[in-house]
Image (cartoon, rainbow over all chains, first blue to last red):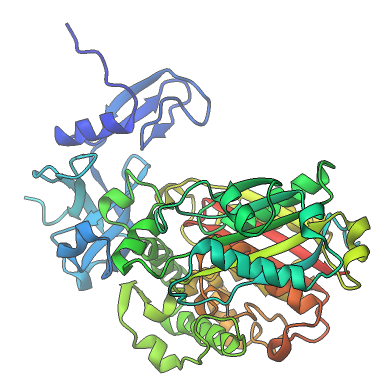
Length: 137
Length: 390
């Protein structure tokens, strides 16, 4: 028997991240891809949604190098964050790793990867991040 | 035709902005309110003021929620109806908007709107975390994005797409510090050289220390009446003739564009239409320069220049005190300071001074029409108000 689909929620999005899957909620009525997933389609209000797995590839729309951060990220300073436009269209922010800051270019191709360590602080969601597509083995 | 007055400002008050050690937020508010009452001797605050609407962003700073009645109490305005509005850094722009609606509803004749934030007693990492609460938690804060980093993401694209330079951004800081040096209530009353701004330490590349507004303590307020009552309280009221507000996605990443704030553009459109004026009718403006790039984007969103030309506009000197359209004569968030909840009505305070010839060394000659542009977070909330000399 097939498992019941996870609720269309942010919590579920991160449950999938812990299984190394980047997922979107797709509206079956108007085909909009909801990332982050929402309980209903915010374009047409339909609740007829399905989970689809995203390829996990995209291009860099913008980036910044953070030198002043809240406490929990201080050990990583300086770190790079960017906004990535995924191949399927939705956009996500996240950290950029495995790339030197002078090699970062707007438009560069990136691929999602997943942290293996679970954060200890609330809400303990596993984090995804992005790295250059070329560097992927 | 210039629009008819919606409401009138008959008095205004502002606490000294800065690092106010040993003073609580509500005490700063009392300081602002005292000035407003003293400016308006015909007002009997206890009997006349029937509602108090306060912009306040965060409970975390002073471990204090329920700000509406707290501040009404310290302002000596109990038992008037008091409430708090929250729209991050546009909390008191929203308070002003709600105040206008309250008067237009006909339920009230005279109200007080204002804002407050006490920030400097906390550490920078704490303030960084509290300010970040104005952004999306699960996808922005959770991945280490800070508040400056969101505007840095806008700056990176603006530079890439339009050729905007770090030097142009630094020029915004130079201009606003020049103005702030003329404002006795500004947090940092000193000039900053282009070289010093450009060489300051990086906060979130490409934004450096002098691209960022200040962590500041302060409070501000306005006394609003129906236009037909204004002359009872002052010979020189300032009328509000246009008000606009709009919202956008909480996450910057979901926006159609990273180089324009759609909510600000829509708020401006609503305010301009209501006021019956165009961008080139504006004589003086206070815009939300939480970061230097934000002022450059504001020029474009408000129609002061074409899309992508904001960087060029700062270079031409148009927006200096002596220019055709002086912007941030108070010193802006950059130099006057940015006690987030207080900022919206502090902008309106400056426009009130300008349109009543009380801005002293930074007075803009013959200013008739003013504009205030207040942005919450990375642009999920924006308000625009247009003012006319009464």
